[in-house]
Image (cartoon, rainbow over all chains, first blue to last red; front, side, top):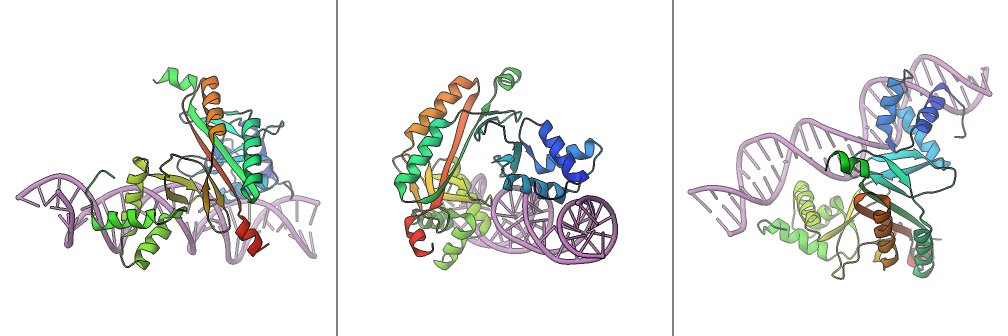
Length: 131
Length: 131
DNA sequence: GTATTTGCAAAGTGTTTGCAGAATA
DNA sequence: TATTCTGCAAACACTTTGCAAATAC
């Protein structure tokens, strides 16, 4: 984030970094409250936008269309497999898809091609816990 | 759609079939009006849900999170390249991705893995028209 | 004749924005 | 002190739902 480092932004960064999974803005807002660092909901949204703009978080949409955020791993992975039950997420090795997207873009006559790839399923732990 | 064939559902099917690109529920509603067959917005939503349930339409989300629908091609393609400017869409040959998704699913220990893959860009026509 | 469907209007959701006051550099 | 940031509340857009009247079978 480019701007000033305020108490609120620091808290957003800290709590977000503590999640290795995707969280919604709303949930992040609740967690901040719970952590005793109340931050206005709009501030949370604005902070997340800033992080998104600067590529520090990856964004995904759940089935309801809600935006979910998670800190982008240092190694630059950008696609995930999510558990629909518990929300646990795992970065994927997606070179294959990456190359495919590039090729399709190049062959299509389209420019500025961007891609979204998301996998979801039910993780082993959840499958075991509640078949 | 399983239920009764009403004037409204017939109109939704007909107008939707006439689009080879993605349209939102709202836009479909407008087009129905324009075509002189007014259909309530909720009815449009309900019809689209039914079509989605029975796999007759593909659904995609635009950047704002709005749901976009298009009739699913007979040959079963399920991923698209969309123009962000004009909305034109083209089904993709996505075997590569399909197989990748299957493999990742199998290796991950996740079950019931589903995937979402969307490409977007600016089509040649739009690039020419407005660089 | 009866179960289903429609359409309106109201409610619901996540997100964005205007603006006055607070906080930072 | 000048600029940026915060937080509330209101605004927004899309979607869903309750319910009485209309309709298909």
